[in-house]
Length: 240
Image 1: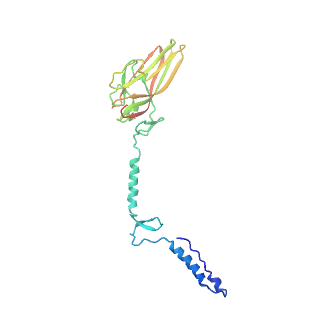
Image 2: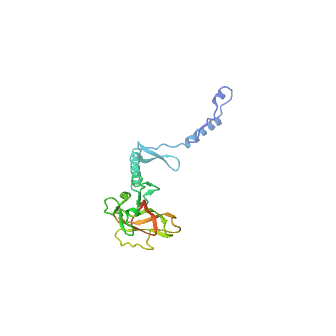
Image 3: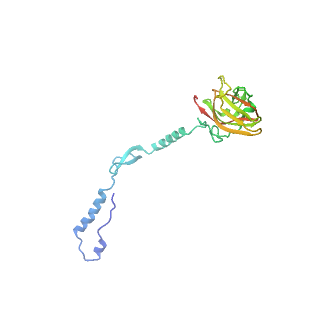
């Protein structure tokens, strides 16, 4: 509706001897007519409680939607949001830095391969109750859908007679694993004076079986103070 502005000044006419002209009435009535002609019309026979909408001309129309239905829509929308909320078990990469997202706790301890696994021998590593030779508690939180473990591998070696190496190996449980060149998940080599130290760390992916068990091994030559460790980072779901 357009704004209506009064045109005729009746007070001034009353205080003078001026004559009221018909044209002045026409100007006033035309302004009123314009304002009324552009107003929004009410909906005839509308349903009580329904929500009003506007048509292309700006007039009100009955939407046919009961305002009480909004309560159900709001409830349904919340249900949908709840359904989209991520579950506690995060698939894929289960750790963000060293904060364990899988169960809301941090698991940052190390698995010392050099101490828990016999040198030059493949032994099983797995979660509590899995039957593995070496228990790694961090794997207790890994879901049954995981088929690979993501770890940081740390190797530290000290030279004795100038040249030496330390290797780390891993394989999926149930396969025949081989210790040798080309099958390492990590290799450190040093050719230096006795007492020199070399260390490195790399991220590795270790395949595991449905019980989250994998095989690990390590090997050295001409070294002392060897340190071979795995640090759990997360897991990958599905077939690797």
